[in-house]
Image (cartoon, rainbow, N blue to C red):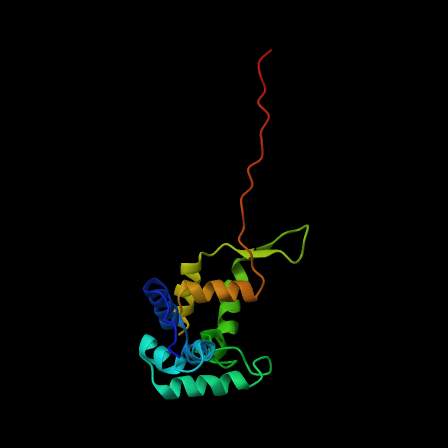
Length: 163
């Protein structure tokens, strides 16, 4: 019995999709397609996706595992580079010292506070203290310490007409 091949347009879409997947998902997708086609399916899928026989075998093994119990994330938790705020000793204290004389807040709501320094001027003052940081780090520090942007509100002024 000869397997029925997919239409050329479908094969192109399948290859594009296969190429967009992570390595683990590629294995699983190839294994599903091979099983779906039955006898001779693995050979056809190997040619279609230009993959090794071991790829399909590992994919079948992956599918036999309980997919719900395994970690579905590609990266492990805690992976990646740590924030400069977490890794640099004393940066928060220096930040708070820089802005302490330039902080104001709402008299109506004690939780609202802001600074009259620009982000760049805070970064420059921190550089003078030995911490070379970008304005992005300043944004993170401002957010971490619950500072908000001060917004000027326009109030409507009544216009008096001469009558």
